[in-house]
Length: 253
Length: 67
Image (cartoon, rainbow over the protein chains, first blue to last red):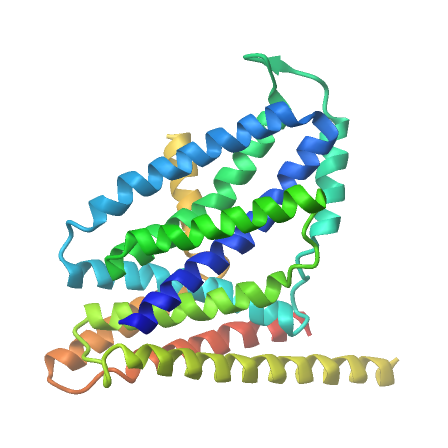
């Protein structure tokens, strides 16, 4: 139980951190080019909306019987986690472009500069909506993970704590550096989160379907180890296949 | 109507993402797991093996398409 609580906080922290790094890039681009007031108000409104989602849906889910809850939430987390893991494997093996925060920052800043000035409710509307949408959309993944993890483990507070810690760390880093956090190993973080979501999702969904795991909660560690080893194997195989293909193309040319 | 379509589209993209076959395979694997449980056969091994199988197949398909 203690190990799954630790994983709960780690998963919540890492998933939140990686999404917040992406949101920070958008907010910095808007803040630097369009001014901070409207941008920060956009961030604030989005954070209030996300908090409302967590506060509304988190406790509501705890009223559903735990087996049904784990089946539904486990299935959703498993599908969601496999998305992250699949993309991380493809990125690590070179089949999908890596996320480049510097590049995204430049693109967003150029787009923000090109926009005209439209004032609504006393706000620079472009900066406000860009930051609101950016933080809300990136934050929805965080809210989804916090609510589902917290409800299935019946520890919403711990899950929220992990997300809050990530928010504080990313905000401090952003305020100190005042530029995109391009040195954060985003793909490694996403890969780790994908592994955790997939492991928890498998564990809960199977439990919900009536499975008794050998070793109870310890099985989570086994799942995590199995998925880590196999996904690293997939990355190696795909890298080799890519290199082989590149060599064939070179010699063919 | 447009808002409902957009809403469903958003959640589909959010949860299911690029490869719907993964979501379908998860559901099929869970149904198979439950059938084994009902037949009183130990079924804990089925979902992890299925997950690794269709994850591997999904990334292999992308790699083959891009090669």
